[in-house]
Image (cartoon, rainbow, N blue to C red; front, side, top):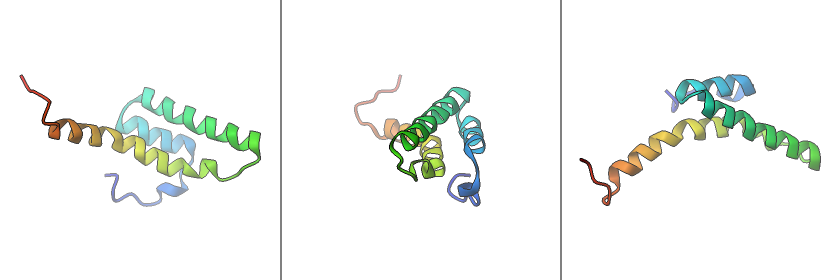
Length: 82
């Protein structure tokens, strides 16, 4: 259950990647790791800190993505079902 998560903010990158993989698949988790690596590189290159604080936020968004897509498809009046 995503909505009632507790302690998720204290998890590290691999724990969040595991949540994403469990919710979707390993390829989606790899995209999560890649996005977080790009944020970490941007932090290092610019000296800006806090970009990777988005670990739990991006993890949650990536896990919710399919739920929103299914809802969108189900409410799309132009969709047809066979």
